[in-house]
Figure 1: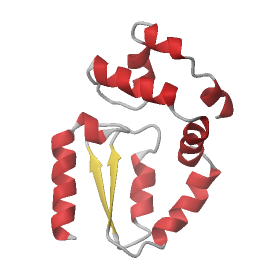
Figure 2: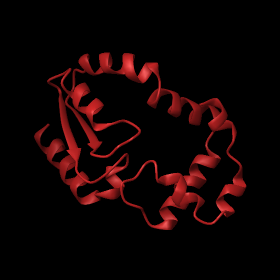
Figure 3: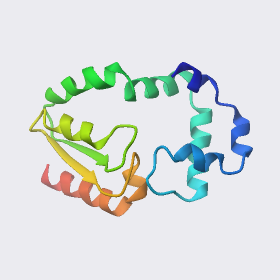
Figure 4: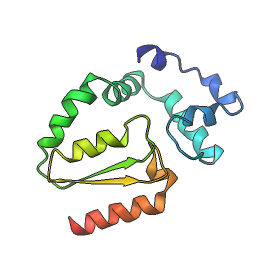
Length: 135
């Protein structure tokens, strides 16, 4: 993870389709090029420690072993949303985490990946609104 975060040159923004390629691992369907470019720009400008911390907590022993135990300790209603084709945090992990607490409502949004709120905003907002109204 350290090397990936260290190599974030600003000139990547000048390479045609670099932002689209960068976003491919997060999406099942492409977003408008301007949105993908904004995501890449944000990643390139992010504080080193913040970028590394995000990566390590999402893809690490901590994420696999410690975080599930935290779900079991939840005391407030919690909405957990997964994208069906998420390669970063597979939906099976979300489903498993949701089974650790009756406080968790699990929703898997079909035909999306790591950013279901961007790929299917209508469905995502509908689920959030329903959760807020019920909770």
